[in-house]
Length: 125
Figure 1 (cartoon, rainbow, N blue to C red):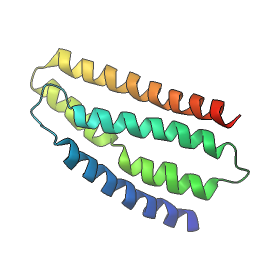
Figure 2 (figure 1 turned 45 degrees about the horizontal axis):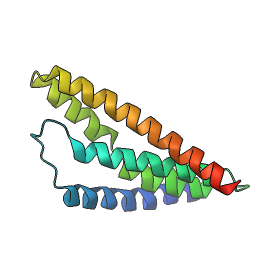
Figure 3 (figure 1 turned 180 degrees about the horizontal axis):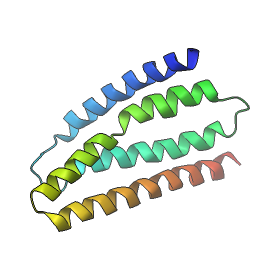
Figure 4 (figure 1 turned 60 degrees about the vertical axis):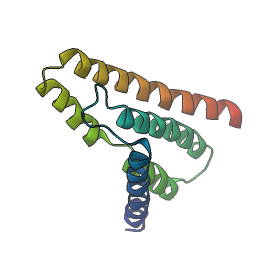
């Protein structure tokens, strides 16, 4: 039950951070490429990689993981926005843009999570 509260609190913080970042990046929902979601998700994945590596150095990090990774960073990154933006591009007949967005987003997020995790492991060793 306690971990559920950590997730809820972290999720609220992450959602507010996501909303604030979205305002700061001034999204243009009719742009050729939804750069605001791309940047937010890539940054979030980098932070998840770093946080995951740090949590590996702790003996019992279940509550911290629930708060930081599932809560804050889960609330900050946004798979649902990414998905809807992809659907919108496909519906507009912008197949190349939609496919580019899907591929670049996935590659970028995987690379960012790996880079964050690898770099943090290297630093903390």
